[in-house]
Amino acid sequence: MAKLYWLDQIQSANRNQVGDKAFYLGLLGQRGYPVMPGVVVSDSVFREFLGTINWLEPLFADLPNSALHLDVDNARQLQAIAQQIRQAIQSTPLSADWLAQLFTATSGWQSPAVILRPSFALESRLESLSHRTTGLLASQVCWNRPDAIAQNLKRVWAELFRAKSLVYWQRSGVQLQQINLAVLVQPMEAAIAAGDLYTHGTHLEIRATWGLGTALAKGEVTPDFYRVHQQTGTIQTQQLGSKALAYHIAVPSHSSLSTSSPPQFEDCLQPDWVEPSQQERSALTEPELKQLIHLAQRLSADLSPSLRLEWAISKRHPQGVAPQPNMLPVLYLTQASPQPLLSPPGSLRSPTPSSAVVLSMSALANWQVSGASSLVVKGIGAASGQIFGKAWVVPDSIQSAVDVPVGAVWIASQMTPDWIFELKQSIGIVTEQGGMTSHGAIVARELGIPAVVGAANVTQLIQSGEMLFLDGDRGEVYRIEEEPTPPHATAPAAPSHLLAQTPFHPPQPLDRPQPLEHHSSRTDFTMPQHPLIRPAPNSWSISAAWNCSSKPTIYLWMG
Picture (cartoon, rainbow, N blue to C red):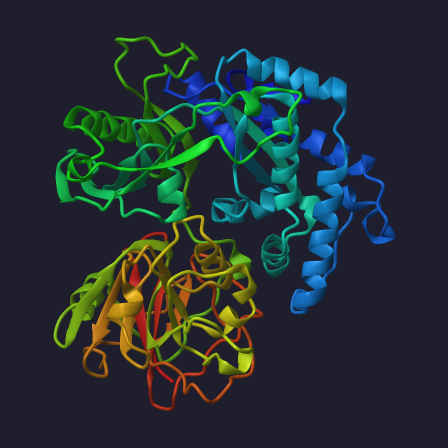
């Protein structure tokens, strides 16, 4: 079995070995789309490597091919096991012959740095989860030298065994032997601008920032934003972001390239302040924006009407041609993944409540922003769903889980990994920092609750106890001046698929609810262990349902 696969040679039969990220990029590159060259370290290499580790704990001896049953609610035990596995991975050497083979491939790019991206493939019955793993494992950037590549390859592998990752897989019912983990290695080139793009069937949403996409992924900038009619390419909305920081490839020092000195793995990305005059300009020129829109339109027709793309603009040609003095900037894709349009498998469906009443999605949109409500802040919609609830502005330090109110919308500057257990009590998350791959975004998707990240100054704009409407799809947070009352609606026929349920009134914060029998599943992630919140007597609950043959519909029912 091949251990390395070139992107331009990947076939359908290789999908499980190379993962979805590499598979789709390879497919697009072979169809003539602009994709950087790359080589994939296959899943078989990862499994063989785990088999070479001298495990001190017998529990891990057959790790590549066995389930790892953990008590994910025991934080201390979980952290200890995760740390033990990750340390064993990073301290075990790679085969020198195989590493030389990999470096031979990467040295041909004549690029000073490389990026190593995790690329998942799950068993066929679990494919609906694949798109939700975005950002779960961090990519690594390092100098293009054997020792740096070896260390960072093992870092990517070790990410699979972080505590947050183990929680995610166990909550989703996925066992480790069902995960195929490959690593896509590509040249890391200096970028003029970078960003992402989402196609939704009727419109495109584009985000752009200066330099590499690192600042956007970390939530350190507010990107330029465009909403575009997908069929005509007409720009419907355009907003200039706040892009004060940009990441570039650092100039390699002698010590970072010398094999006789200790390797430096963290110094190849350099953050720089953007000049004020440049901050006032859009990261994309008009021709670049048109090119990106045209590319997205072609991809929607060729691959899927619902896509998530990541892109960059560089002076290096995607086919690997080194930059030339007069070479024009070139747009290329760094990630492309179809997003699901249909409902999850039948096992996640649930019946419609008998007392449900129906409200159209457009009516809800008009209702939520009208009357006694006002938009407080707009950020990045990192986890889908809408929720009404009372705000809790997280203090600088949480003394204990007892201090955390149940059923509140968490408002914080950022979310740290050690909050994962307390966050299970929240019904929504809003943070000032972070991007789609931040900890708060990942945890929100795991818990199946809406989240907005990159919401500037939100901790100063909102006070604890205020009633909020949180829209995780649009990235918007509204302040509700009055208790919301549902509009008039009539009882519908029961739909075939009910995919999302969110409480309309927040629960009483002093009454910790007991976990209820699971009656619904969210569009983003289902976790039966999440303590579903009991609505107050005679209060309204709200849910969104998607029928394969109809438009999205909102259901309301009395609690």
